[in-house]
Image (cartoon, rainbow, N blue to C red):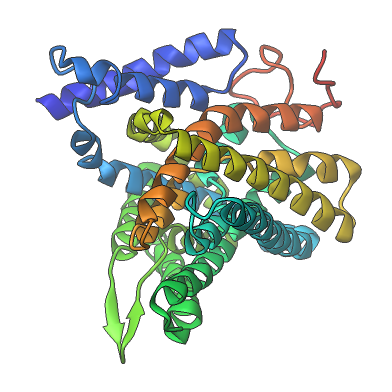
Length: 429
């Protein structure tokens, strides 16, 4: 009973909050996060009022399966952007920008936090500094996708953004595995090539193979059915299947093998949309089915945000340095790589701002980083940055897309109509 009541308040509360956000000209995803924050165990939930909200962090954690499924559908939807025809035009740019901006961000945060260590070694260790640098590379695909979908954003910047966000997951995985391996070596005095290089590459390859196979099987199974509702049900079933399989872990010859949920589901969507001639219609129906699931995902994400980290001056100081360095790294890395690949002035100027949101992937990395001697500092800094980025990032993404002319001003277009090309709107207007 308590779970159903909590989910009901989450869904209805998130949607009601989105009405207020609309009046304030903020994206709906920000409203969902704020609703979760209010219903979470550090606000209304702490009052224990008739099962309204979530009383403890454990109650939110018990609903993690909803977040995992939502991330699976988000990745599946982003995979739909990797169509061969589009990759011919933007593939080289997307790969270059995806790699360069992630590496540049990691280097910027590494330099800033290592410098902070030398100023005062008691603040943060070198191992934690370089681990946070790699975590900084991760971008949240969920918030970005929700802003794009809410405002029907369309254009060169939007297309490149979705490709870069997808590539960012694979790059971030390699950077984190390598950096965390070096950090662990600094603390133990032993360097393991297995954990630094082999295991992350194995995870990426296995994820792409599993996702590719699932996409092909999904297409073959879909051909047995002609009813739209049955095809929709099969698609949902396969996303649930791939999300479940991606949680498996095993060892082969001493090598720890696992999968990335985002990469597996993204590859499933990529293969399916490139070999299935009715994929666009089906993806549209999947999008409409997942709308309430995504609302719950962001409300639960907001409920997970720990407000207690704001009471620790040490976390606030390191977090501020982390946020400033990461923001500069994302913007300058995207700016330089866009100029390098010959992107338009509009993309070059605005892409970096749209890459600021950070959430689930970074939190997962921070959980692993708790194995370090001061891993709790890493976790709390990431929690603080996620709190800031999740509340501010979607609004910045929206403003950047408006400035690039790929979102029309609210109220001018029907929610049922896809935006056509729009003239750039100055942010001051």
